[in-house]
Image (tube, rainbow, N blue to C red; front, top):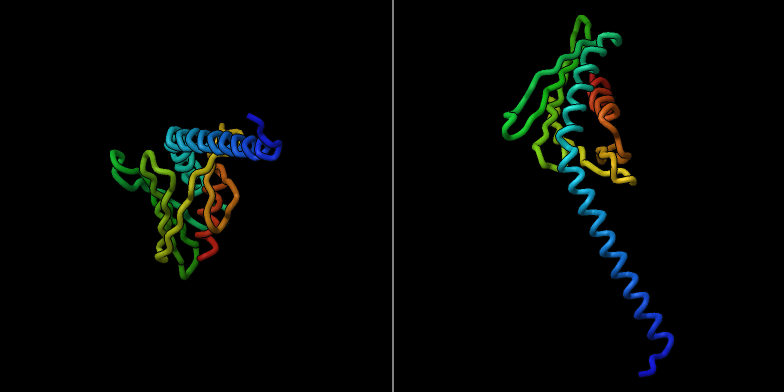
Length: 156
């Protein structure tokens, strides 16, 4: 059967689009598996960095502390508190929570705000990071700790 060239072209384009869709679905699936497998490790690194940061805020005339939250069987987390050293001390805190297998880290502040840090996978599909609506750029755990504590200090 003879097929016009333009029909062959349309069929080839449809086949290419289908293949691209399949490849994209595979990338999304791989990224999702990466987040689920690496999320707990990322969160533990974040907790360690928050502890370091809580200790370090004393160099900027503040007092920081961190305490565990949650039930490790269900979710883990911490409360990071920061207060200014002054005659009229001001304090704030942020609860940082993660459920194993989740694709987000949930954060709740003393002031009643809630924000979500969503996991993402960097282009090479090797490293995971998080992004927030406020800061839509992938952040590693060190940058996330800075992001959380700077938000707190700006409110004091």
